[in-house]
Structures are given as C-alpha cells and as structure tokens.
Image 1 (cartoon, protein in one colour):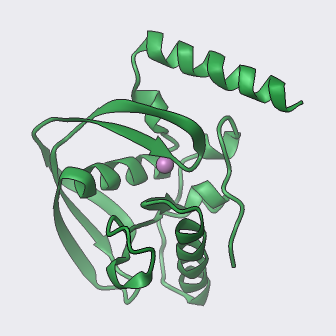
Image 2: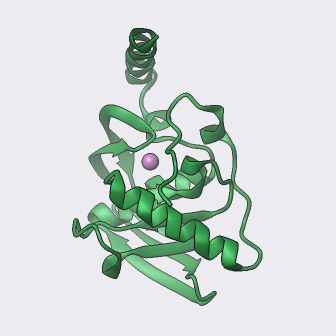
Length: 168
Ligand code: NI
C-alpha cells in the first residue's frame, strides 16, 4: 500500500525512532509499504518516520530501476565507520522542491539487520554512502536541511513559509 509521505515542517519528522526488537509480519508489511511508496514517488531512499512510523527501518535503491532486485533494507542501521568528505546535492521526499549541497562522509561502513534478521555489513561510497547517512539521519529526526549553514537554512525556511502561504 502506498503511504502518505510526511513533509516539512511536520513535527513527526523531528522525532527519534525506536529500534526494532523483533522482526514480525508488521515489520515485513511496513517494508513492503515503504518500498511501494518509495518507488511510486519515485525516490532513492525512504525512512520509516517519513510515513509516520517511528521505527529504525530504512530502505535504499540507487539503481534507478524502480523495482526490488536492488532494494536495500536496513533495520536498526548503525554507521560504524565514516571517512573522507563528500559535498553533494541532496533532496528529500519530505522536503519537496528543494535541493542543497550537504557535507557528509565520502565512505561509510554500515551494520544493520536485513528482513531475515541477519546482520549485514555494507561498505558504501559515493551516492550509496550519502543515502545511508541521509536515511539514518531521518531515524534521529534530522533532515538534510538541518545540516545547512544558518544563512542557507534561513533562506530555505523563508522559501518554505512562502510556499505554505501560497497553498492556503
Ligand atoms: Ni530524506
């Protein structure tokens, strides 16, 4: 089922998500819905809190194929190592019509559980490394715009307020 993606400034996006303790059917259903929602958008990543579920689950697919073979499902993901510097343009399904460059690690090692409950390790670089950092941020209530300089964030907030007023 395609779920509604919450958008800035919805306060649910600022809430920290809780670890998944046991992988049940409801977690499997959640991942299924997240994948459908992400591919429909379309996007390259989605975190559970973006559809209002505060559990530490993220999905990523940077293949551009928009179907499951390359889907990464990471439950309780943790960045165990980050190195190098990246400064690439990012966007977010929860922050429509806005993109900006964000400072990130260029390479990360991520550990997480997959849907079978097995511990997996990803050595990621480039776009995948950035996607992991961006999605894991969502689990801690952090949006990419929170990484911007004060001046840039101010410009973004002004733009968002104007867009919200125009919708009224
Ligand atoms: Ni995002």
